[in-house]
Length: 295
Image 1 (cartoon, rainbow, N blue to C red):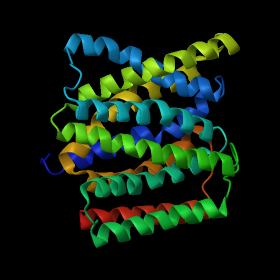
Image 2: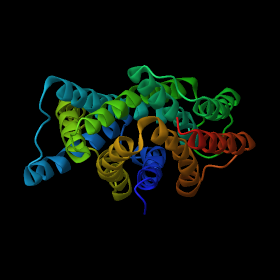
Image 3: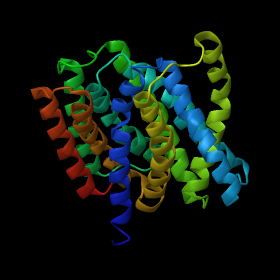
Image 4: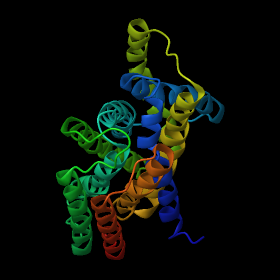
């Protein structure tokens, strides 16, 4: 695999892992409350990351700027996002949640362009517009594929908010990588900091709701989100952003809802509708245009 292709391939694999998040959130929500799912995925990820940090002797970043970027990444990616996304996904279908997350590349690329004080290329703007138009049409029509939870405005709004927040964390994590701080260290310390911030919430849920009586399926879904989504996925994503360019790699996120749609149909039995198919085609067309443009 050539050096130019590696970031794109890694980013695409991460999209498959992250694309499963809405379906896994739904599965976990069968036995857990939404708050428990959001908290547990970060706290368990922190418990996994802590011994790895000790064994590999990953140090905290040096300097105010690096530590500020780490803090932004931790709060955005491992505190605000899982809480907002889980609460939102409980109130909408997995397919609908996936399509809303299609706005992530636009947010990430736009934030990066603003920070760099750089105008995106015309093809990047055109491709993003095509993909976002497909998403906007789907949200406006609000079709339901039969099985699962019907989309609601409250659920959609929470997921939109989670996308706006986590995009900030993506850019902060990528900046850390560009400043020479390894993606592994950024991910491990980010999730550890997030777990520390989430610990009081976990304690509160245990006091109010008691120990969760969940089955292996629900725990497996939480473990997927804690280990693959929160650790393995972030490591690969930060590495791809740092080595492939934020705007160029950010457009790969348009593939996340596509993989998520397929997984929602397979795992949850949700059905495809004509607006879903049309929106998916628009997203793929947008990916093609933005990749050719390069940002």
